[in-house]
Image (tube, rainbow, N blue to C red; front, side, top):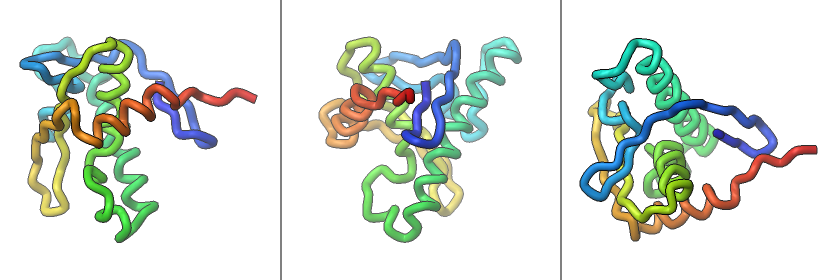
Length: 135
C-alpha cells in the first residue's frame, strides 16, 4: 500500500521484489523504462506501473521542495527507497537496498544503499509508522 498522509492511499497487488547478494530491490527498477524482462506482458505492465508511480511521487516531492530538495541526500530516489525499505520491513530481513533513477543530466544510475545507512533507517522507520489514517 502506498500512502501519502492526507492525500491518498493506493494499493498495488502482486508487486515483485528481488533479493540478490544481500540486496533487495523492486524488480524492473534496474531498467530506465521500468519494464522488467522475462515476465508475461500483464505482470510486466503491473511492475512498470508501480515503478513509474514511485518515480512520479519522488518527482512530486522534488517539485514541492524546489531548490531545497538538493539539501536532502537521496532526494532523487526517495520513494523508491521507501518502497524497498517497506518490503524489507515486511519480510523482517536486514538487506541493502538497490534503486535506479535518472539524474538531472538524464543518465540512468543504479545505487546501492547499505543496510546501515541513515537513509535506510529513516525509510524503515517511515515504513513501520506510515499507517493510513481512517476517519
